Amino acid sequence: MIDIHCHILYGVDDGSYCLSESVEMARIAYEGGTRQIIATPHANAPGNDPNAWGDRLAQRLAALNEQLRAENVPMELLPGQEVFCAGDVVSMLKNGALMPLNGTRYLLIEFDFYAHTDTIIEYCEALLAAGVVPVVAHPERYAAVKEDDQTAYRLKKRGCLLQLNSGSLFGAFGRSSQSAAHSLLADSLADFIASDAHSPYVRTPFLGDAHEMVSDMYSLEYADLLFRENPENLINDKEIQAFY
Ligand SMILES: [Fe+2]
Image 1 (cartoon, rainbow, N blue to C red):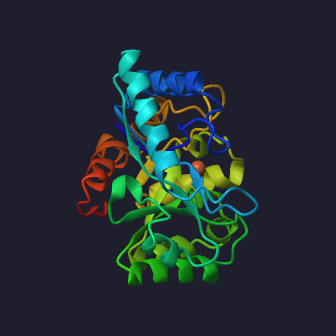
Image 2 (cartoon, rainbow, N blue to C red):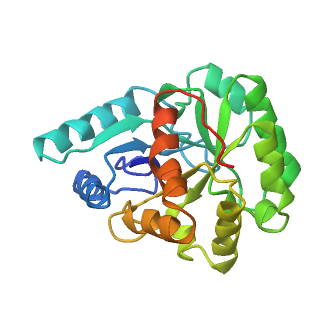
């Protein structure tokens, strides 16, 4: 499996705290069947360091990959960011301040949990017009999606992709997010499931149980699409197929 959303890079956001935590996260991910992880530190989050892409993050990623090799943890980390939508994200992207998922056309984006539907749609349309495919992180956690089941359809219709958090399937973010996540799965609107892991203790990068749940409740074919095939196409900058 390939995890496309994970705060495994240490000391750059509210994710992993130190090098040893990052290595432990990679070990846990490996035990759960993950073989590649896109490291997606927060970027452009309000009130925090903008975490602009550059040497600091690139070197941290290289150092962590090096440490994994040194400790014989067979995990490959790829570059990315989780970009909070505020201000002129398109200009930031054009200026090289943001790193799309593995440097592809796909950009992982997040919003305020209470963002208005129109705000979400407007940001997505601006990115699409710039040739970027938005991958909306954890839509099941947004009020706009939970309170109106048309929001997800509107995003998909425009060409956005939806990434659910594995923890949402088990209720880690409350019952309403759990219910929204399963509705998106039942309606075949989800494109990816990723860990959004922040530590080796809670919200971990272990994906094995979530893959098993989707396989049992929906189908093995759908589970493999969400955890393996779509992420593989994404990291290779290929088209993502809808599941109908
Ligand atoms: Fe995240």
